[in-house]
Length: 363
Image 1 (tube, rainbow, N blue to C red):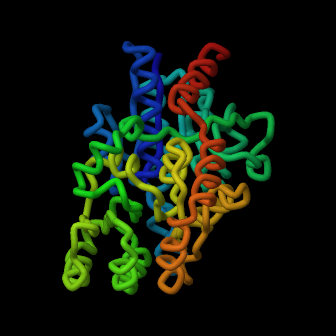
Image 2 (tube, rainbow, N blue to C red; image 1 turned 180 degrees about the vertical axis):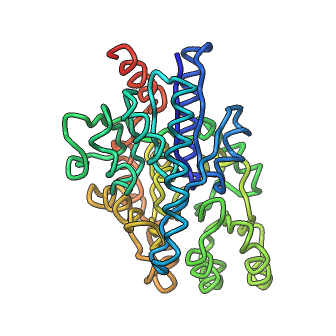
Image 3 (tube, helix red, strand yellow; image 1 turned 60 degrees about the vertical axis):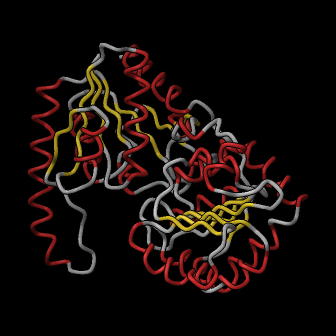
């Protein structure tokens, strides 16, 4: 069995791709898996680190601000299509899996033209440009949200959810309290902005450190590498054992296990993790993403009373006050936890892997 997997550009694309590969390898240890990525993007490092071979295409995104610069982009696109054709011809995959991103567009289009069945995986509640362009080439489209018929043919859609990090499940609260030096008698707020951090979330915390310190709430604040120095400097007058500031949390399973409430961006992976773990959350969607898909992700939860939304533009004024009020409201926390758990799609990677194998058998 040979599987071609393509996509990347962000961790939100790369992690599901690797998870699907891992599930396939676990079910079928002898299967051959080859990744196709964009030469300049993070998948060229992340995928080999996960133990898989990857081939890069010279593909780039269009420069919408400087139209004249797109001549070279079109040349690279043509080169990428030729290279993708060569890869498919030489590897001869039984199936191709696209998870979004520039490279996925070229690889899946070529694979479909050469008679290879294509499965797409869409992580977000608002479909990405690449997957929308590929919808007619795909045999199946695995999605994480209901209502995706407005983007894709209904007969191709399978609701599988997004693969999440399996090591997040089963963290011990007692172990977490020891790890971070917190106590069981006070509420715990977890603030995360993704691995790179989130400027708005960090600035919103800094603006209200006095209120946080006076609230009695314990806070684990993950700033991201680029923001840690500013955060440490700002927290100096307010430091106590109730406030832990770090650029990176290695044991996210423990952080989630002890959190009574989470403040987070609304990326597809974060949303899936919150659903799986049943965590009440305040979502602050990033406005700096294609087609504002984080807001669509967040609203899928908010509309089912499974999360609270604070707009990025309102965060500095409202985020912390909303959190400090919500974290003491046991009824609301319980309601959010119950509702978000109902939205969880479990064992997603294995379910997607099963659909990949079905496509091969159908072929």
